[in-house]
Image 1 (tube, one colour):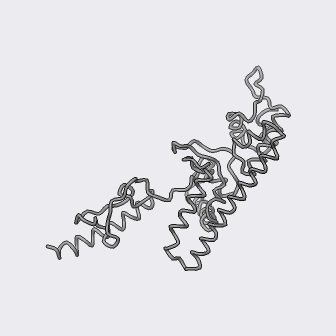
Image 2 (cartoon, helix red, strand yellow):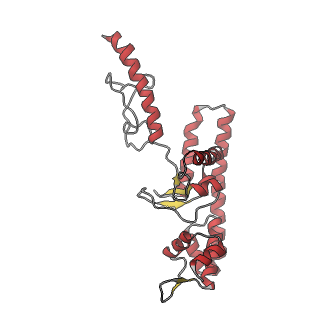
Image 3 (cartoon, one colour):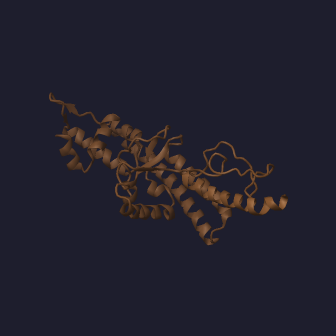
Length: 262
């Protein structure tokens, strides 16, 4: 059977099938003219792979399941335990959100909420530096990505259900926003675009101290540490917001504070 027929039969993309071949999950025969021929056995494997991916099995976990049918119960038990642990983490996030809502947005709860989201993302990445990722088309549809595009993120990515990992109050709004944004910028919403989680802190290893009110350095007058490099932002948007705050603080310093000092 050709790759086109298999893709249509199993509702998989050709890219996903080639990806599963590339990681060693299937081994189709190569005919004399160079075309791949998918046997009934390889097609059966693809059915199993698709099912296991929908159950949030990683590639390595699927490899273990395919090695020996006798290991299936062990694999399923292990995955069930992992999902229960993940569910506990999600319940914890929901609890933090409800606590935040009940206090009508108390900022005291935000650090713990942030840490919980980071912990869940870390575990979804296999407790390594790899980042959980998902094609934005799959994120909006609420299904795990069968494969991922290349990323400039050097440690690598792991296909993960970010629509479930992120708190519902966040993921639902993101999903709606992406759909709306596609109507305003054609080509933005595509299978080649992906999201990674979670960028919640500055990339700077240090933070230059500044006064919380004036945003000026605590010892050097006229110096306003700002943005990502100074340790006050984690990306483009947060850096822009911090830059705007610092611009206002500088304006106030030049027009009000500095003349008084002189």
